[in-house]
Image 1 (cartoon, rainbow, N blue to C red):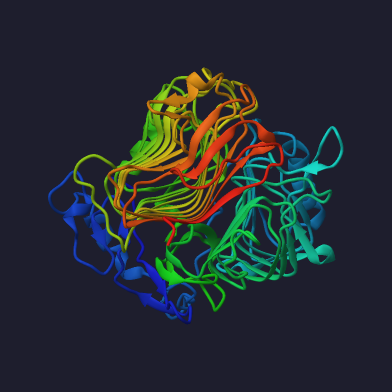
Image 2: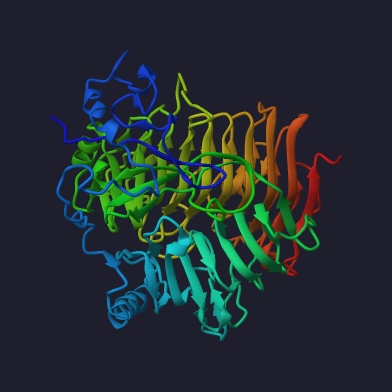
Length: 639
């Protein structure tokens, strides 16, 4: 018999944040087809036409639900002895958990040792997660590659770091600092009282700030003024000003800022209180007042009894500001006992067995060398990575596939292509009978893809979205332009992201250097807020980077059959280092249709290495010349 257990879903009021108790939700317990507070939905069990054979295991536990934020009844009132605190989960050697009783010197030493190793470990194998239980800490956390720092409170203000949680620019041979390769690190679910009044987060792609409270200023560029290129903040509050300085692109979503200073090419704000007014291209601010659909990333926390749980924020529509500003984030939670806590030594067979039994999946830090496909087939399954857990499909299989079910949450993972070619690294549904629910979408959050760099890697497409109603929330797909195993015929990949499903929303889409279209959007009613992209550096000549009837490939293509699509804040750059004479017809392509609208687009030729002849279709001038000045189109089609 499976050891799978179910606890009820706990909800908080969407206005006050107070506990409201067990409530009917669209969240579904994996492997059971049983929806809390609702009738069984046979549609959720792909192997049965009715009630899953495991659903009876859920019924006994449903009566024991405890609302989020509510205290358990005293032991005497229940006629029971007080139970000891739950044991600490075994997250493996690459996760350190601190509490306020841990000496500050011990915490600092652990952080410093990781930083010394990871600041220069761009393609190394080490992975770290540092978790802080509720309380106050006097530490300076400098983050290097593959390092995550997170609080274990239910609110960001439950954990306070007095000092810094920072990323610095890296010194360059010719002098100055740069953050152009400061990838793969994160801070989440904590507050920072920054020493000196300002916290520095000088990063480029795949380095999110989520659920953070900066009690001061936030600086997004290196101290010496070097460049940074692309970043992401969500569900956060910055009390002071955000100083952009040399940060080229950025997305801030569902947050509050005390102010924002300047921008280089494109700064995008979506549902941000305190954001600057819409003014693209001068200043380069794209401001969308509310986020049409959002559901924040799951996060690990410790409850009042000392037990570990994973919180699942609720779906929201047309919102601005952070979910926790007025109290607890609305949503439900799952005890850690319902997760299979995986180690890099676990086989695909072991992981799939746990998933088939109805477990959720928590992947601890490390590199998982997969000899097959991780299969997610139950609706409502949560797959959460810690410390940039990395999935490498060494035999050429698809690393992970999500079946046509609703409500799956994939978060906090790095997919790394292997030398054996995979058709894709992550597949979300697809084929006939796409099943979805706009009120219970599947989401892909802080999920990153790499092809080459750590060694030769090959894939057809990094991410394929076949299901409808999917939320893509901060994805970076990168065909490597430097590192090991890099070259036009070495790290091969046609597309970064292909969207075949309808009603897909992307907030924070970073896709770079693929050999055909970086993004190919085939589904209807798609929406993107903030797209950042570079074309491949390494085509050997024009003939290798040409399609029938046109030079080059657009970075973002909406397929000709699509009739409804809208996007805001789109950037495309070229830097053809092997043959700087290469030309590209347009950075963006979209059908001429009443329902297709693109807002605030730009193209740039970096140092004149190549030419992008038009911004979108045949609109907009050529990006060319050594001045590295963007060419912009504010609306397509022009109104």
